[in-house]
Amino acid sequence: MKILFAATGSIAVPTLEKLNEMGLVRAVLTTLDERGGRGGRLIEPPIKIKARELGIECYQMESLRTEARNVISKLGCDTLLSFCYGKIFGPKFLSLFEHKYNIHPSLLPKYRGCAPLYESIRNLDRIGGISLQEIALEVDSGAILKAMTFPLDGTETLESLEERVSNLAASFSEEVFSQLDSLTPYKQEGEASYSRMLKKEDGEISFSMPAERIHALIRASYPWPKAYVSYGSERLYLSAVYGSAFSLSERCTEEPGTVVALDKKKGLKVATEDYYLYVTRLQAPSRKEMDALSFVNGNRGIIGAKLG
Image 1 (spheres, one colour):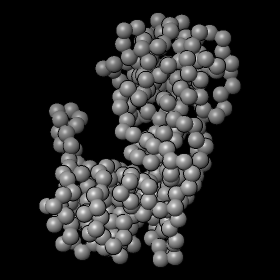
Image 2: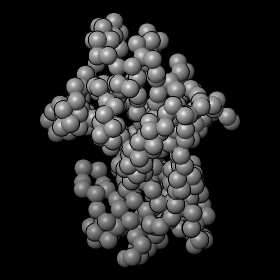
Image 3: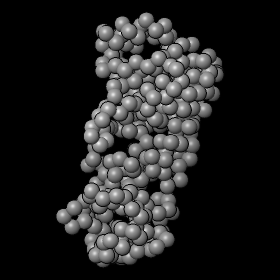
Image 4: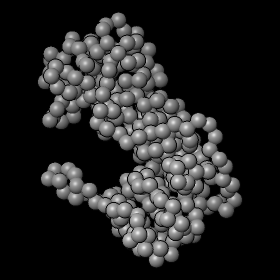
């Protein structure tokens, strides 16, 4: 097997390392460098950086049309493996390979699309998963070769869950590609759900929501797009919350959004429509993110104020 590994983000790096150790990766396909950070400097995709470290040829394609297909067809790869690549493969590109697989960080057909981890946290799932599927023309609709599950405890952030899945996917890939010939594909079962590209507005919070939903949205939105509420005439970003969304128990009577007090151990105590929520880290516009105690020391008026 000679794999063309198509990926972009850091979530796929351990899988590339593992498959390379197994001698399966012939080349890497990734997206173009993008401008970002201060000064708009060019930032290389994490998978490109790792490919260079491993001495693997890396190809960056703006599109997968004729010119790209001509280049890829000469590499001698018989297998395409995609993992959070970020582009859709057309039938002409797929025809270059005998085998076409995709690693997707959900239990398909749940959360097809580009933001499955965000949706898993936001929807308060107690079980997460990773699927290896055959690539089909309809996004994430192909037959499943193997899937794995793992528990979620209601404290995961998008950042921490991505790191966890990144490591799990590497060991999962090693297991799957060691027994690939013995696996029988099976059709996806159940109703499909979808995840879409995230926007900044997806982080907006209403404190009239149940506390567990707000808790989940704050975690699902970190580190991007970051959850936020209005505080006075500005946005206030809420970066972290205390405890698990599955164990909220303090009933509240104040109007939703009211900042009731500061608990030095748990954070800023805020009323919702049902339970108190403790916000542990906050960030004002154009300021650094800080813990709740430090924030209150510089913003005394927030105690008793109403957010949102």
